[in-house]
Image (cartoon, rainbow, N blue to C red; front, side, top):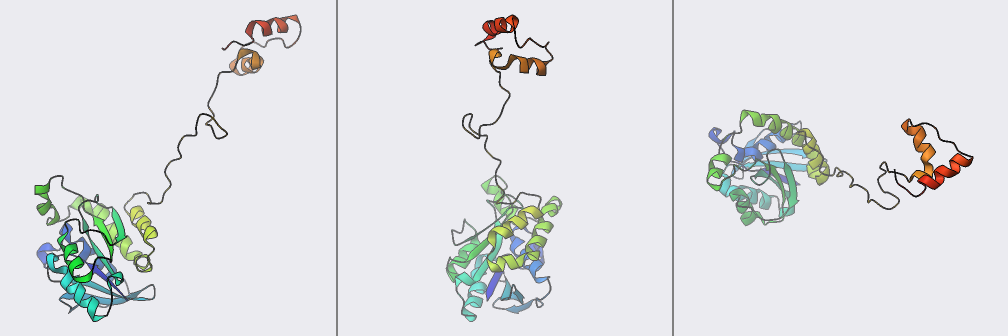
Length: 252
């Protein structure tokens, strides 16, 4: 069994906040077929369902962000699970808007909801971080995270959440790189595993980039004359011998 915990603050006044993108993510998953309506348990709203043959409990703590771990920890202990059975989804200031990253364990990065999870559940749970961007100055952070997403954000927010819900089985199966690629493509980005452009080959060696080169005149002057619109030169006889002596060894 897995617990997928979306972090956020309860109440309609917080529903559209950037800080509530974790709630938005599990709401999107819950709307897919196979999940029960939300009900109250563990100081949270929960929904049960199945993904990739695995029983899944979606949970939205109702204890406010700073105490998120109380609800998730209670559910974890009730089902006799460990942190390895938990996936937390939350907002990340240090990721550009529309970016996503996933990892197991790590630091809290100043996120109070994650601090609470660490305290109540241990640290070795999987963390799906959804970027909300940084406002650029520390004093602006509070209003940024507790501010609603702007209309322009919907161009990436809705596709991102839909792609996460559509590919939630990858999240359950641990197909993290494939999931990241799906999310990146959904918002018009490039897959994370896309190979970078090939470096230019070395100037020397078998794979050297072929570039037009100037050839010594005596090497193939007639060939170049044909390609460059110059008059044909004799190939034999005294004149040809004289031309060889005149141009042999010089560049063009």
